[in-house]
Image (cartoon, rainbow, N blue to C red):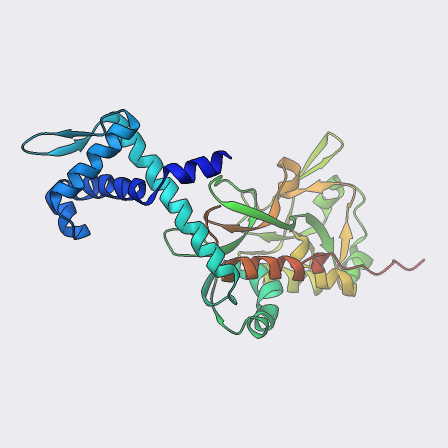
Length: 322
């Protein structure tokens, strides 16, 4: 009932009054607004006056030199623009819902995660949605979604930007693991302190590459490692770990295939490690706004969420012999 009453009040005349008021504000006067709208300035003046009478408040301060909004006028203009934007969004979304997703979709993907788990299946999306063109950028740098015109991004860790609309794709679980050949030669660590006697394969971009943190039921542990390799390339670390060169601390998604194949073995699984020891982290699909979302964006978000559920890097692992 309230909606019908509002629509009745917002007759064509009412919308024309609002349009005249906003045009005057945007152009700075009745004469320039009249040129933009193709109307006579006196007509716009009458419409704004009618709007003020209907609302019972002065919206514009008029002098011989300038026209500007009152405080009430500024507040009304802000709300009116918001309402018109939402109405335009609703129209676009309704029209979009009846059409096949199309257009260019710009994606920002973490380099290693994107190459491992997204790049191999992107051709399937292009097959399913032939009217969508993808521009995919693989990088670990922080991407300004709005400033760089990105429709969707995958971010790993804790989200700091509350203005983003996020959809969780999976947990960001870190673990310690090593190759069976390494463990056969050096023994299996049973507690975090045991790692001090092992060769660490260290990731240079961690805050403290050689210092690993653990948490278990309120108990904390910290251990310092040294070893034969320090690098900023995660694939290099995995290759070294599979080759039996030491113990690696990394994200589960990075070594999911190696764990499933038995090329690496998880260690100290009853402990949380790395970023998990200091708070929850996750893998999120994010977009800039909760407002109108194009069909191409919705289609990819739903598609990738379905393809990564359950997370393929959490595949069953071999059962140890004996």
